[in-house]
Length: 390
Image (cartoon, rainbow, N blue to C red; front, side, top):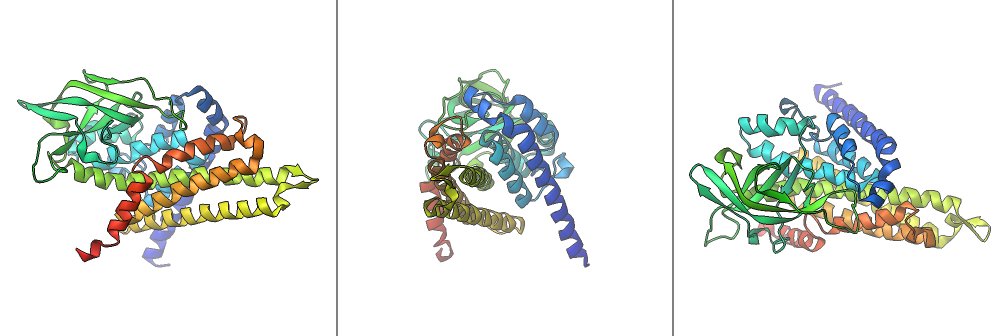
């Protein structure tokens, strides 16, 4: 065995072990409680803390910075396993591991790593990112929140919308406008790390959502929030670039979530179709049901294959901005297709909250919306097709 072969074998062994750990935790510690958390809109704080202690809040952070230092493929496979048990828990982890962790690791200072990133990696601090606003969802550059200099400090004002982990996070990575540039709408945006207990930071009550009801989503109001200059992440004015780079990883996380949701819906449907009898035979024996299962399984397999291919390409250092959008687009629409068909396979029972596919159906929908809607993903992909012409 060559040195390269040995290294690849070691990575593969670690991948199997980590994914198995995620699967075991998901099936024993998350899945049995997911329906109750959904009904009660209960954020599973203790479960998230336990996941943090196991390293799930530092999956992509380097080992030198107290993280697990996992490759992208292992990360998305672990998110799939968590999402198959409860999409709410998976998005809590995915958000923390995407923009806050990736931007801080890439652009933070050693002092900021010590102060925030290492505790995040160890599961001691939970993070959220605040980018969207009521008037700036897909159009990030149209945000109204601002930061103005006050000596060596910055003062932030504005209201952020749809913040996952908004009222349970310890840290908020906040994108605001720090200057106006007449030549470009995307210049002059900057990221700040804002501890949640900073005076002037006020999350609103959690939103009452269709799905992901165990995940906390709030607005965050910033009123004269005073921060020292060392809370600025990276360069002043480079925030839009950082956001676009961070969203690439975030989209892979949402794609993984979608694959996990779809896999769970498929698994439930396969079992139910084998157990449920009509006209004295299992309904799986009817072509109408069998063909549904075949189409569902094919969509799941295709979405997973695309996602894993993009994850491997990202590890090779390739530009995957367009392909990440493809993975997110295809996986989210596959999840919606598969969960819709799952409800149909279950028939009347599929419409009842006593059965899991109803929750999976509700959870799947938002994967077509957040981290860039399906329409935005199609814009990115279509533009990417002509990028070589520039």
